[in-house]
Every structure is written in structure tokens, then in C-alpha cells.
Length: 241
View 1 (cartoon, rainbow, N blue to C red):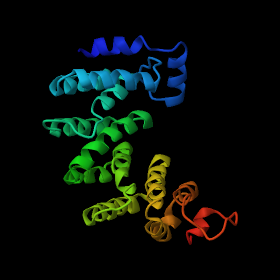
View 2: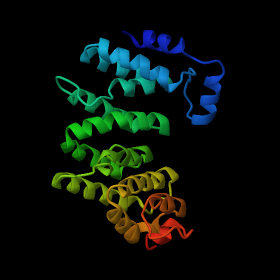
View 3: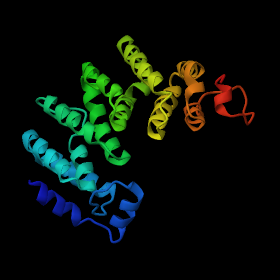
């Protein structure tokens, strides 16, 4: 399948008026077709099943290069699966090449979900991610936290998972004084999700770093932290800030 054929198939699922709505909402300067995510899910699921890995990688690369919003979303979804056989290395390398081109949250998050699967499959790839934390490109810095979110969701983390968690929290601590809204939101997202399974560690992070965070991010990070009573206080105050 060529990228042109895939985009034609996506266009057939476009909804009247939706392209203009999406352009206004996402604000990134690129073409929009007006296709809903469930339709992209359905098509990319069929393509994943039908195409050999080499063809799927080529299609994902071409769809990303099209710079069409739905094309980039589809490219990411083509690589979003727990196992990619026989070798997922080329898929990871392709995702890494996309990261410096991230320029909007929706496309970046879909590509990051694909990246999460590859990191969980091979955590040593965190060595590839760490340089992103020092990038001048805001979306690359953000991707380092979004791609590592699976380590916030572990109910029974192994020692090596705890080491990874601390490594990423170290990255997050380096971000807390960054004024960019998306970076602040990413830190809050990581700490908030961690608080569901490791509330004390989230609280410790906020006690140590919360005073450098924007108030909205501090509140969001503390949103699920347990308290002894619902006293109406700001959750960040309950965190000891």
C-alpha cells in the first residue's frame, strides 16, 4: 500500500466540516482531512494485520512525511503494538527520528504511545531517550516523560522498574523550573499518575520540588494524593507544600 492510497482511504471516512474544526482545535499548520480517531484505529488495525513489517514501516514513514494530520496519527498507530516481530529495532529508530519533528500535542502523544511500547519491550532504550531531556526542542523534552508513563502504572514494580522510576523522576525534577505550559503539564501528569500506585513517592517529589512548579501543575500533580479528610484544601497544601 502506498501513502497516497492510505490517505485516499482515510479521506473516504472524513466527516463534513470536521477538518476545519480540527485545524482550529489543534492549531498546527498542516492539512487536516476531518477523520475521527475510531476510523483511523479501524483502518490502521487492518493495515497492521495485512502488511508485512517492512511494508508497514515504509508506509508509516511515508504517512509521517505527508505531514497530513491523520497521516501522522496513522503512522504512529501502525507502530503501536506490544510486540513487533521479528525485530522492533527499525520501528524504534523510526519513532526516534520523528521526535525532533513533534510540534503539536495530539500527534506527539500518539507517536509517544508507540514509543512507550518499544521502551517497555526494551528498557535499555532509555539511554536513547535521556539526551532528549537536554534538547532545546520543547516537544523532545516532553516526549521523555510521556514515553515513560508506563512506569507510573506498575502495581508491583521490580527493583529494575524502581530504578527506572527514580531515573525519570530525576528528569522531571530537572524540568520543574521550566516555564513552558506543556512541560509543566507533563511533570504533573507523571507525578499524578504515579500517585495512584506510589502516593508517598509522589508526595516526596512535590515536597522537594513543588515550590518551583506552576500552581496549576502542582495542583494537578497532587490531585489523587490521599488525605485524612476532605477539608476543601488545595491538594498541593495536603502534599505539604
